[in-house]
Image (cartoon, rainbow, N blue to C red):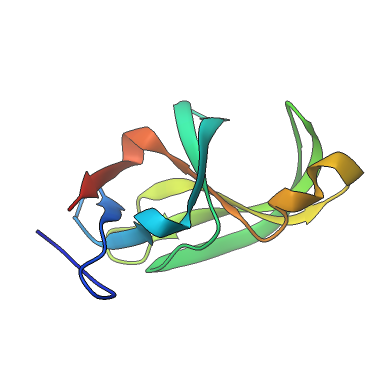
Length: 106
């Protein structure tokens, strides 16, 4: 089992087991990604942030960048770079990671 930061539980890439996010950075489990259920995280690690693009999502318009596992290159979700809707500003700088792409480890 992979552990980091004082043996805190974490989420890792389902493809290569690279640590991606700490359980303590999980903000919500009530999101939808490109392929289904997704989680909102305040921070992510061991990722590569792709190029910025504007997207129209369910809750409004955003500037986002896809995020990839730095080890195997698997697309994991996206990072909110800029949020245009005032009610959605809390998402700015946060990460959507699809549940199908990660595994929880203890």
